[in-house]
Image (cartoon, rainbow, N blue to C red; front, side, top):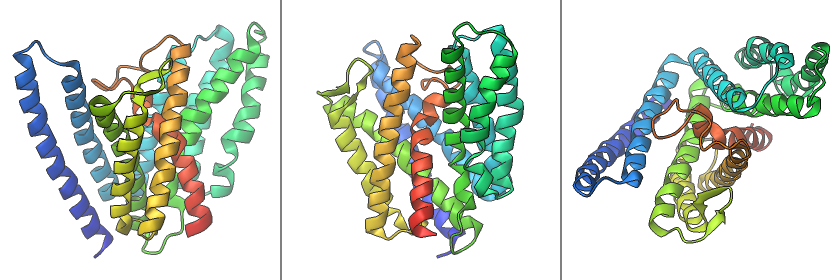
Length: 313
């Protein structure tokens, strides 16, 4: 079966599941409406609507190719970085570094992916961006809270630009079968990450009794992690044909993705709590901001990229 046929079958199956989920969600909403409504059902329906959008985006990426995919992720990084900066207090002395982040570092990072320049892509922000930001801030002459301010901006750029850019960077890997195989690998990663998030939420609501970190994220439970994570791993293994992995390798890689995504979501939840915020933004109804949707991806993508590159290319 060709890559295009695999993609068509996959998107057809996902669309069919979403039709069923949307119907069930609508029925549950109508039933709950007679009893004053339910925040859990509303949240579930919001997640289903977000999945429809994600399927449309993935379809556009596959059909329109590498350039569109890189541009879409670059735009996602713009929104995520803006949300991070909005929640992080800044001073006039931070303006020059922030301009450099949005108008220099972010475009260059994604251009390096488009140009297939892995050697510089991997070190540009962790080395040159990391060193440039405190220099630009020092030039402003504002030393109040200097270390805290520069650290926040450095961390924000690494999470929202560098780490997220590793998802489209999967298109750089030299896989047999051409660029469509790389696109399927990217889709596999996104499906496993997002399914893990959704299924952890569902299992947590149905069976959750023991919070993993109640002071950080009460909704993340041991039962949700085990049930949702195991389900996502099973789906990832079942979809091994989209990847260069065999079924056992796909299961191991899915396990790596699920754990990295869960821990990344936990770490960024702690960052939100430290800033006194529930969500990073309000861009997506029922889901907060762009970074709320990409928090797991930001931690899972770099790990997945480097393990895939080391063992499978």
